[in-house]
Image (cartoon, rainbow, N blue to C red; front, side, top):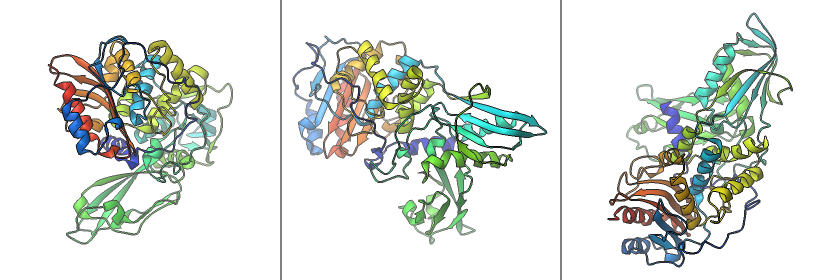
Length: 494
């Protein structure tokens, strides 16, 4: 489990390049245009605190690159904000958009919601053999990682099956999403953050390679998870010369990873690195699930006379058993703490799946829009695109997001939402924040030209504030100290 927690962290967008994603929908389809803000809320830009102005100058960012709203968490649309600067301007929020998706899901689905993956048997079991097919029906579980795939296969063996005289059929029809080119957005198809949603998403469509140096043997052993059928994987790689620093160890390996049937390393591994983990997205994303299912089945000693293929569960067939995901409250923590992109898209698509019986991005956007109008009201409806914020089309205003956070503060699911947010200077994507440790629960966001935070700050006065701060600028990568200064200023309220 520890390894997969590290993998989850590695999947999040921690650099400017890694924040980009090829998963795009149809932009503003089904979303309302920005509306006139309610009277009395956050209008013209106010003077910024001196420390924020100074941080902007050091970062070489103009004032109009920043949009900010700071207001009482218990405020209403008529409550004057403590600070508002360009709060009514639509901006690209990057992964801060995940706040909208996760709060909407907590309200509409409930914190205890789970995803079920039913498994069906077609045929008869006799003497350890199933003469027929096994059907695995994906329903959008965003956390069907290797450990849980192992448990699924163990439960299949618990039905008295060691040999499948037939096929394993994967049913992915619950999601109706566009074909996805993982290289389209940033030319990095092997980065796990570029994984596309899939009704049967296994291990985030990624493998984890663990390198363990053995100095005495002069090599590093490589462990691969999950096991994949039909893939040749190099078991060891030579160590670099003694005294070589760790440095760019991935580059030193000179990995060849574009062939879905073969993994080769032409280089060396520095022993100074110790044990390291490298998550890599599948070179053949569509075929990854079939390779993983067959690989895990055979790893457990199972035999398969047919193949693993795609298909649909026959009408009238009853499931032999069902594999249940962690609760939505747990999934939302992964989404927000570590900014997991494909999980956020699964949560977003599930809004449509529960309403319409099939998940589409248009259906999710329409469901989100209806929820927003009923709960947040006349604040501007976000342009959510894929629900993860990994888009050049996504838009919202600091004022609208601030209002949503005020509504959330008074909601029954507030504890689950707040607990899912990174804590400044402590964990998640804020663990390296230079602001006062423990004073804020904030979602972060970053793209090539975007840096943002949004959530709640706990002030010295005992009051709770909503903070939304978004930088849209070519130099947004330098904006972290600006955001830290805003967190500190908000927390110093006496």
